[in-house]
Image (cartoon, one colour):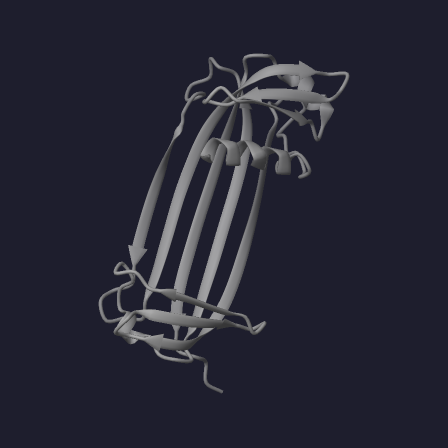
Length: 190
């Protein structure tokens, strides 16, 4: 699933600006986005750990906080829950003989609020997947990539001139960096 998500993200990047260091440099692309959402605590039952949040648009979301939610007893009706998500994806074309060309894998880190503070958590992860250039069609401006699980997908090149810099067998390295923070704060007073 992760590989498919990363390869589909490549299709989204096809509409972004292509950044190259020089005319003879291998193509690379990156894009990022940040999304922030806030809601206020409309109801909370500390015994059952049921929480209801209300958005600024008036929508309500109810859930049961898991045992991994530390310091739930510090949360009160009216507190503001803010979630921030930062994602960055980058694609780089590399020749298979370049050092670290086939690096794949992932890494995750999590940090929680200190005991006695309002709940909060920051999670970050990095995923790296490598796909192989299977076909290049200069006339059509398309290329095909084969993922690590053997799936082949065709893409339209944003800048067809960059296809001249690639060869069948080259690697496309996808890196997805994601950071999520969830913070609970008392409402601001005027």
